[in-house]
Image 1 (cartoon, helix red, strand yellow):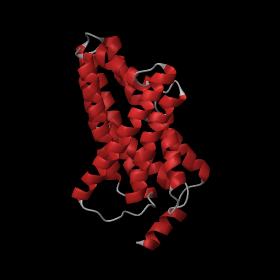
Image 2 (image 1 turned 90 degrees about the vertical axis):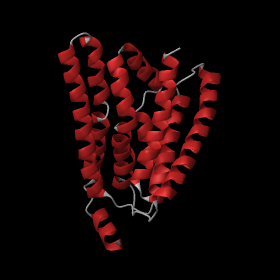
Image 3 (image 1 turned 90 degrees about the horizontal axis):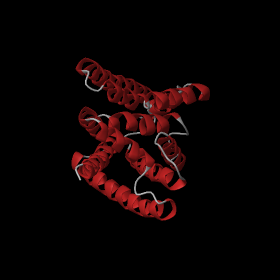
Length: 235
């Protein structure tokens, strides 16, 4: 196992190629919401609405498949043995850590910038309230598709493509930073909200080597956020 790990690390592409891989994935993961937004402009046209939804889901499928292949190819972080029950415990602990950090940063965001939620959440809420189809599709993808795509990119690829296999904090910090860049932020506090979440997810992945834990934690976090948004929209 050790020989394979170091062999994979030696077979990494050059730095420029690695940067281009992440840049390409960073750009591609921004595209699905743009496709979904098209539904706003074809309201009432069932055919174009259906095609937009199919294109949206298909693009997510391509992203997940492509990033999974890249992740499997360039993975150098070793997988620590663990049972599923233990993974659930890590997910719960990780969510409590994210939740606690979001409360503190949310209070600071309200105090210093008079924002009750991040700009990223405002964009999502705006899309959801505009159209019931968008609400359903976005809710589904936020819980079941986005966590796979984003974890494979921001944790699976970034932490394996950069720095040595046995480095820890540089991987965590870089993952959190690039993850936050991929979300809409209008001030330093809202940037830190996503940086902190990304860093917690990266911490767990690098510590365990089990990408499934980060995906499950991301699913739980997004599910809670989506339920809260839908509840607010019903008021």
